[in-house]
Length: 338
Image (cartoon, rainbow, N blue to C red; front, side, top):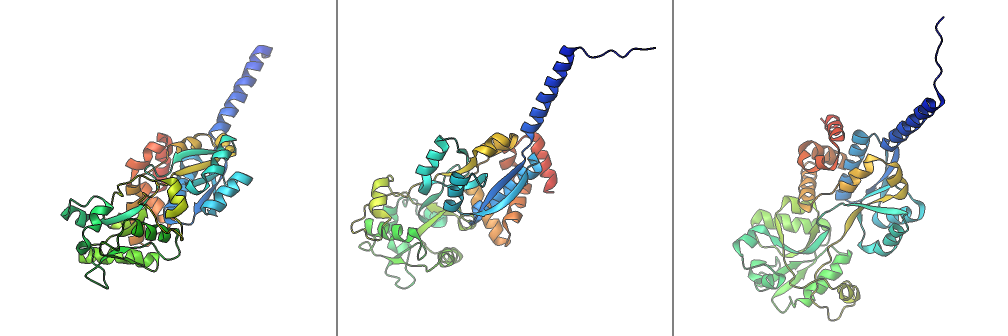
């Protein structure tokens, strides 16, 4: 009769340790459930959809998309720890309390969503810049009202303002005064709406006419129409901006550059600890304004949703995103978006 040899106690203990270690490693690799904020503007929406696909297909996360906006989302994350991820958080307006939450360990900054930041300023069409290489700054452009004629008075140049009711309408109006544009033969044009502002650029491009005015990136318009941002020739003065340049009552505004907005991905402490390799993806994932502008232009031209834009990006620009993920995750994502 053959006897069954019992495991020695040290061997049994070693097996138990290995089992626990293996289980812990498996748990660390599991992403689990994650809530991702889909902000209510186009670049943030498509980035959230990209995250959803990569987190779900590449890392096996159980992803729930929730609607969001800058202040409500970040406030909820600071106070309630929900949602887990804000993919494109423009943090300039909430930096102080957000930095405090990060210092306390309740929230964490992951990658810069936009590696070159959000950009604002005065722009001209590239064909105007190419034909007039001496125009580099706002001062240079204001010497040539003839290149940017007003539709209502051809003897005047036109500076196109930000849409009515937006904060940038105030800063653009103050910039118009600070640079003495009126005395240099310019009028400030109210486009009425974002669609009106976009339409003025499209019309200028169709007719190859001059255009000068306020715009920002990333946006679909700058992906569709090549524009050149003018150098204001002065640095950003935060104190002066907050005291005067951004105010309705600013009697004597000074020349001032627009601040480059810091745009980060923000994650909760819970998800940083529980998300495993998925967190490493969010620590690497960023892109530039040129890439975003071109994607948004494709979406506009094709009347595409954020979901459509995300799939198009993942299918057509692997050179941008495969460096964000592991080779295994990249293969899974590619298979999912075929």
